[in-house]
Image 1 (cartoon, helix red, strand yellow):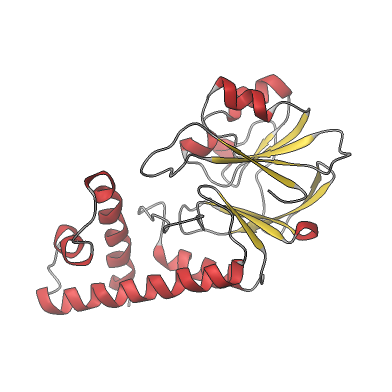
Image 2 (cartoon, one colour):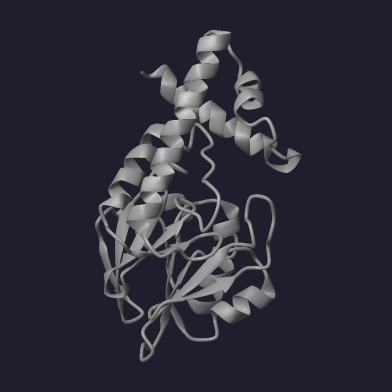
Length: 246
């Protein structure tokens, strides 16, 4: 929680959602209405918390259902437009554009295009708050899954470099706890991804270019749990796609 952003944890914990989806209420204390970022699942108790104050705008970091399922119902209850980078997920609002400055909830919210996890992923900078809402682009713990073809590793590596340029902002992630330093965590993420790519290169060198996703996953993620095995394989697929362009 920061001066402008209050985290409301949705009741949808799981292997891919960690403790659950973090929805955010953005507003200054004296604002007449709030901004909701990522309404989360369609859950009555969760919606009640998000609508405790009037809502003037709903923003989406990316299209995955654990972030967007309640969007239409929240719009129906409040009349607030829903805005996302993907027009298919907008309701009575225009698509978000990179660099756009939104004035709502008494706050200034800068849209930062951050493709990689998904093609439509965006982050939201609260410059007055020295914070960045990162959706699933950067998590409070663990690493982000990239599922081709919607997600691409090349885009994600570029995104991490871009986020690192914002400096030591507080990270307000889509899952997990907040983190103190965006630049530091973006650098750690980047180092991790590059090290993983080196591992995959070594496996390919040993097994040959005909290696399968399953072969690489067994070598790189030998102890992965069954409930996240598919996600690990998707990450390997993204890495192989990236290496195929070298």
